Structure formats: C-alpha cells, structure tokens
Amino acid sequence: MNASTLPSIGTCTLVGAGPGDPELLTIKALKAIQSATVLLVDDLVSSEIVDFAAPSARIIHVGKRGGCKSTPQAFIEKLMEAEARKGEHVVRLKGGDPFIFGRGGEEVEHLRAAGIEVQVINGITAGLAGLTSLGAPLTHREHAHGVVFITGHAKPGDAGTDWRALAATAHAAKLTLVIYMGVSSVEHIMTELQAGGLPASTSAAIIQNVSLPRQRHAVTTLAELAATLHAENLASPSVLVIGDVVQGVAAWAQQPAASTLQARAQA
Image (cartoon, rainbow, N blue to C red):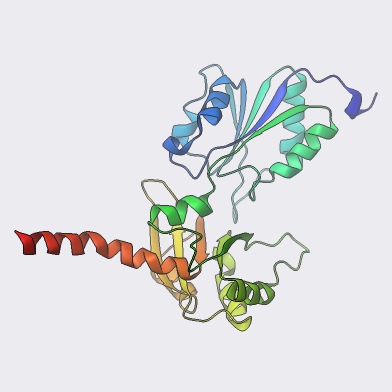
C-alpha cells in the first residue's frame, strides 16, 4: 500500500495568522486554532495568537525566519502527515497568508499526495496590512493600476528575480511593488530597479513588525532606500513598498496637524 492509498484519520488545516495583531485574525482562523489538537507554529506568529489554542493542544514551534536557523521544510511536512495519521486535528499556523510566501503550496501538495485531508484558511498578508496602517492604498486609480507581491530572497541555486525587467514593467504599467524578505538584498534590489528604468525619485516605505505594537516605519525614495534602512536601524521582518502610492503617507501624516491649526484659527 503506497502513501496515496493509506487511510486518512485526522485532518490538517493551514491557517494564516495575519501580520501579528490578534484582532486581524478571521473568525474562521480563530475557530480553527481553538479546535486544534496539534499546533505547528511559525516564528513570526505572535504569542497572543498562540494563546487562543485550547489548553490541551500540543504546541510545536517550527521556526521559519529569514537569516535564522530554520526547521527543515521536509521535516515539517512529514510531521504534519504523521500527526494527522494519529487522528490529530493538525493546524499549521503561519504568519500572514499560507499561500503568499508561506510555502503553503508545497505543504498542500505533500499532504494531498499522502491522502491527507487539508483545508486552507487565508490570513491578511503583511504587504497589505503594512501600507494600510500608514493610511495609504496599494492601488489607486490615478497612481497605481496594480500591485506585485514579490520575494527579495532567492532560493539557493536560483538566479532570482530579474529586477530590471520588473522595473520596466512597473514603471510602464504603474504598479506598486511590495517586496518581502528584501532587507538583506536591499542594495542590489534598489540598484537593479533603477537600472531597469524605475526613477530614483520613486517613493518607498520600509515597514518593520507590521501591525504589532513595536511597528516602525520610514518613508524615503528608491535611491535612498538602503541608506534610510540603515540610518533608521530597521531590520527583518520588514516589507518594502515602492511606488507612487507611498506619496500619500506623508500627506496623511500632516492632516492631523493641519486640522488642529484650522480649528485654532476658527476658535
């Protein structure tokens, strides 16, 4: 009997924990966490979200963070399968969304090939929550006709993204670029984007620890992206957002002050 014909006793659910703020969980995600008997938790999931698990649930931390020692992906997949075969309700709890740079696709493929029932529950991705928290959209009828979510971290042995080609397309089509895991390669990314035709003056934002109380950000330009990141001592986990929509962040930040001045003038 091969793996695909073995009986599936338990279930697996891939749950997006969102960017970190527990209040950004979906109701469906919360119910899944509460019903889990085994919870496999990524590093970027906040402890407040893990606390929603039942007291009887077995919690296993399977670290996944760029630049740090990580649990091998193959081990995680085999562990999920093994626990499901024991009859457990396995919840794989991931930061953000399981299907946006969360390796959820790989895990679903493995589980389905093994005959394990699997469900996916989406979560709010940091690339969306980050710029939203600063009061700016990712798309805009006048400034951004679309958005590209892309990783700045290439798989070993992979040449990675053709940043010059992407820059040309983004400039011509008015696209917002949202770059995950790009901090360690920021100098290369900004240089290649400019070489591809994206203006040096293009607005950019760096947002660290999205949605958490310790969130920090800086607004700059493409040409000053690396310098700003280092000057402000920003680090991973951060998302980089590049595009004209970022211009609205500074304007939004000035609105409270302008409203106060107007109120004083009318008093």
